[in-house]
Image 1 (cartoon, one colour):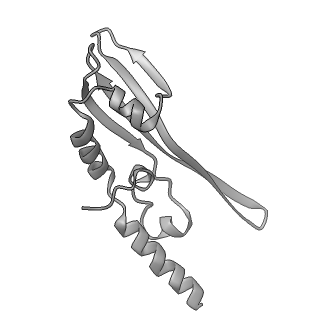
Image 2: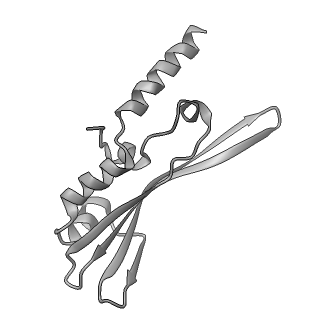
Amino acid sequence: MWRRAAVLVWTTLLVGCAASREQVVAQLGQEYVGQNVDVMVVKFGPPIGTFAMNSGDTSYVWQLGNQTDIATDRGSGFSSTRFCKVSVVAAKGGMIKELNTEDSNAGGGLIGALGGYGSICANRLGISRS
């Protein structure tokens, strides 16, 4: 009983420390918008995908992490995959114009019972709630 209560309190504290998706986008935007896309390649490695747009801009996508959780009980179960993707649009010369994240927050499990996982990107990038 005490162990379960301790886990519940610890998990609540961890979820409370992670930044929201909006805070992650704002912080990454401040850091990278206006910079050359090469800065992100140096930081995160090569993107998993690029797309040349008709406007002459290029879209880039980085997947910064993923995790699949599997829970079973008495012969049945479920799985969920959580991930963080960062997408940018860069002008023809490589200057980043836009930045966004796709931040899956699958429900379920102990943390889901507490109301959500917080931002997967925040956890992966070490961005805390401001």
